[in-house]
Image (tube, rainbow, N blue to C red; front, side, top):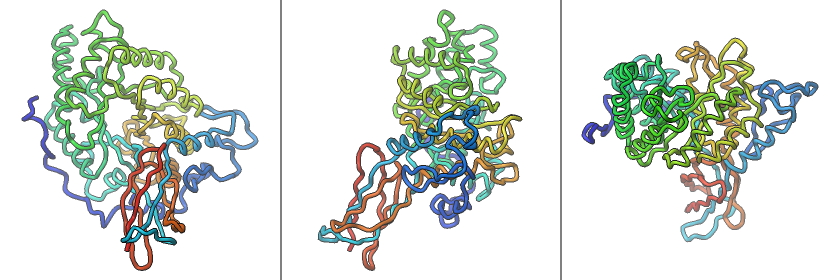
Length: 485
């Protein structure tokens, strides 16, 4: 693909439904009013930065006080949530100092200060069905409203995969959906450049034929061309920030076996080629391996193989920035305790600077809606507390178009599942800054805030001023001076 073929802007877009004066029922900026009275029973409601859940009749692991036996995904001790909240306070918050002065830079005492969060630094995302978004949803419907009001990050479920990208109709859906999401301020991750699994519609027909015929050169050349083409197509597009260059290499590696027959799939030189091509195509994009059975279940062999792969990548200068951990749970006994989750995250944090939860969901007869909510709460709080994790993406949110018919948040009729309350309680209540107070004699007001964007409104007498501040570093106090007169 030449530079002339790259996208210089959006194709014909979806009919406009962006009206900030008439947001839907999940409006992010009025979140606390919407959530008033919500909150999953027994899961607790956060009351501020770093605060713990209220005392109630249940222990911290969600079991009855009289039952000390841990369930799958539970803890025998009662400290998991206290420990997670302490890590969150250390890694996800910082101090904000507001200095209020008059036009002569003299401090103003007793000025009223309101600090209201407008967006998280952490990525809370969802997979989006591009075909449904483009061809079936309409302005202000539940699907579009939920995407824009519950998430700040998105990934296309299928339409950025290789074969779909090369088919004109599917590419048009991908482009239209991508620009719709970008126009609304969501960050985008690309998924996935190379996925070697047959039967998923992800591999072009000519490449399948070459694999059948043992034509390594064709597979080699076509895969190189594709990685360069799709990543360069989106290079320079603001908020297309990362790519899964390689998906599920541990379980599916037919192409690398064909191209590099003398090397194991965890050390195939072709992997380095693909990552280098992606890095050359977009030097600003973060590049990921995306893998299953890392956080979910007890596949120690799978985790060992992934560690072998990322260790080799580090030794051979593969431009690997992070690991995507899918986190599909198709059985309830695939739950893991917070201690086990943190241990696995610590293990891989030794190799990469970024870990993202990329495809979270749970389904199967063993799961009840209540159990799904309890585990989402525990899982999300645990991963959010880990300093190397910087994103959580659920693999769809609505049963009607979920790939297994059981999405985390909404039933087919758009009624909310208990996990909706768990998710919104964490993201928009426990982890949402809304603080107020008055300046002291030196014109200062200080508070703890979560990392992200905030609006600071100051009122003194009949005058008021609002300014925007971004809190980005948990190790350094953020200071903003508001001049009012």
